[in-house]
Image (cartoon, rainbow, N blue to C red; front, side):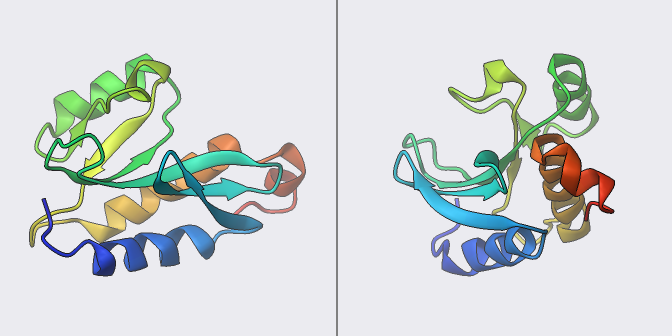
Amino acid sequence: MSPDPAPLLDRIRSLCLALPETAERASHGAPGFLVADGKFFAYFWHNHHDDGETVVIVKTTGDDEQAQLIDLDPACYFKPAYLGPSGWIALRLAGDTVDWDRVGDRIAISWELAAPQRLLEAGGR
């Protein structure tokens, strides 16, 4: 867990809000990021369930992709409480080895999964 989550949240916020028609809104006491029609595509959790984790949680295409990501890199990815059964994946943000390109890509993919068709047809991200 990161002792000071503010710089991590700032970085996640910057990545999320750089995408078209996005906004931030608190969800269950944590920052959440929505696209145009109000669908969440990312959440930032810091010790959210006293789990000691600082993470960004994003959408996947489903259980298969979620399992593949966890198998690929269990040090980075895990199935988060509550959202995990719906196919969401958590990426750990604590430490000096965070691959911010990967985090940005996963956020952008999640945005694409939540964005309305009109945004995707207009060129997406």
